[in-house]
Image (cartoon, rainbow, N blue to C red; front, side):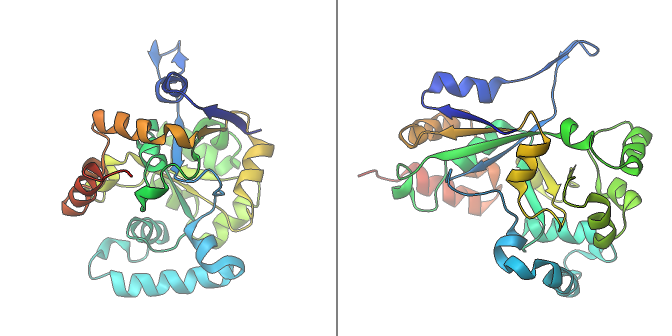
Length: 267
């Protein structure tokens, strides 16, 4: 089930920022939680493909990917013939895909939860950070996926591991049905992916409601709702930790966004 945790003070934020599981076999504090921040707690978990193509997602996904690859291969020749790389590169540049963005860093997720395109709306609504546990998801995967994880001694899939398990979207959808979903760590295509500590969940076409899947099939999923009155304080806390647009989007775009917000005048 999904745990609902409301955050109304900075002290309560500690549970989200500092949670780590002690691993006695390693004598280290490590877990495999990944996080996703949303600026509005009213938003549902959905992919950009679902939002863009709605009920025609299944029919339009492959033609869209075909055209993206046809036009993008000059800039990114390594994506030709690899549907998973096509999808990751496309997602990275705003192309609608079945991938859902996550980060290994709760601070990075908080950045997206404490950011608005219109800063006048910062206190208009609560925001949210989602947390899921990769171990919990991957323990449910079909046997051939488990065998590949064992082969490489890892829990998180790379592009090459996923391609070894499944070379096509059709096969992935058949393997996963509506009750499984895996997480992939993308290759370090550029500084933004590295800075954001990015991960993606690959949502199968049969999974119409991601939140319902998590509620029914997981025990460690959590939804941290951040009170709208706290958002500016969280934003200033993140700036103090150097979690800003300048770090999240390396380059002049991020620098410009950061400076614009830094000098924003609140009414």
